[in-house]
Image 1 (cartoon, rainbow, N blue to C red):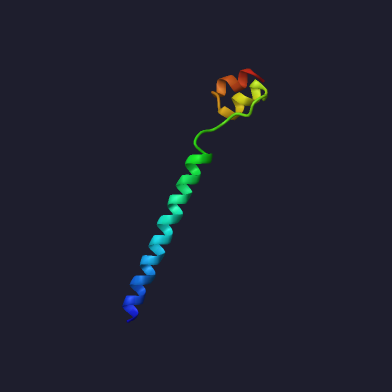
Image 2: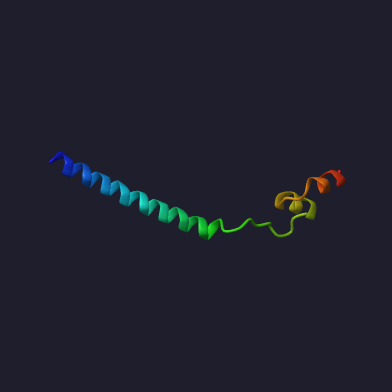
Length: 61
């Protein structure tokens, strides 16, 4: 009897985990698909956010 309850519990937890992973991946693909740079931002700040080589950063100082 207890073994049957354990199997049911494991199955329910597995289903819940699969559903959670599915929704997390869906949210990630909708809102976090690529880094974005806001419009109207200074180009120096934009290159800092987007990432640039260390040589460029030192020469701009």
